[in-house]
Length: 137
Image (tube, rainbow, N blue to C red; front, side):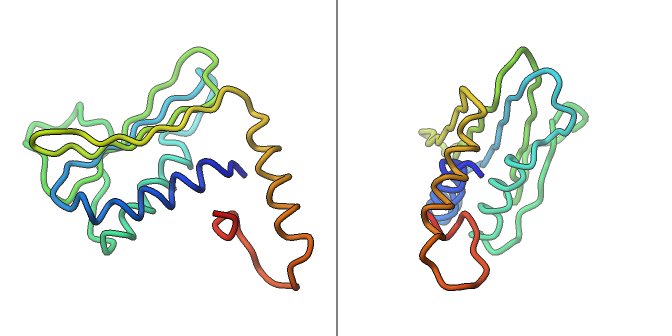
């Protein structure tokens, strides 16, 4: 229900085609007790990028077992777990001469409540139907 994460998904999907020759990495960091890796949010970001690029990318998780150079059709996904971090998600587009990065950091779980309130205010006067957080951004 994070409004900002949904906005981030929309932004990375819009800019991904502009970085068609870039190496793309999604990095996510969460508290030490989080059991899923990668997080659903990291996959949501990767899926947004992949869809914008024609669903032709493959996901590579934590490169430690790979002994080969990076391929052009990869989105790297790395998970970090430690401390009490609520959530941090970074998408990086690595070019030959520069890097473009979009990052979101949650300092409190209240961002989910704030997103739910924004959604409730958005939907209260809408006709019956199916809506998602994407309709807010």
